[in-house]
Length: 346
Image (cartoon, rainbow, N blue to C red):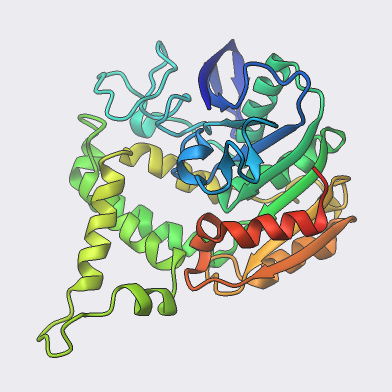
């Protein structure tokens, strides 16, 4: 995948009413140009980057289901992230975002609220810059699915085929409650509020990630992977060690201010806002659509994908099995590939 940057110098009016004076968008493509290839646009989830070969490595690559030698595959880093696109670690004078950029004038908590529709607006700017007039397949899981369904509503003629995995049409009260607990963890870290540097809030970020991970997995997954090896141990520590490891793993590559921004952004998701409600909005989608639910997902239960499939005019529903709950959208590559092959031609 080829890493590139697009700087849009014009003003970007956000849904919250604030304006960004130019934005940088970091993105990866599988070829220098889309000409002569079918276009597959992948929308990444919460803390991923714009290189799907790193986090969907069994689906994206040479000779794989999303064949980088056959298709023009593109993924853009979301606004608010810390992987090159404008976010809290950027500043008004430097729109490029990078982890732990310690510039004193970085936005941090002053970065404006970014909604799902703002993420799609940035994607549209990049699409127009690249001269892409049609997307053969738009796909996203989790928060990436939020972006994909919003985009298919806002520009229905652009999208031919749509795949929505483990996602929904609106931020549920359950998801918002999980987000709120993570925000509270960030706010409990005094270094987060002090905003002295972009490394502030690391302890809060690690606690927040630990909370999130519980919603990404489930009882069965932990029973399979985190059971104590010594049946006579006095206190169970394996699961705790895993939670702490995952928290530190995220804080080593991400910053708390971007995490906060992206969490708040997921709470804005509501495709029916100012469109006459969810059913009316989803009814605008003209793409042939596949909704993939994960039977053990506690974050986006099957009923959320059923609601999408029932409201989108030309949609099908597939339910895949996984021991790993919501994270199955990253791990169950064979089932995902089969479901797409069974329903769509790309």
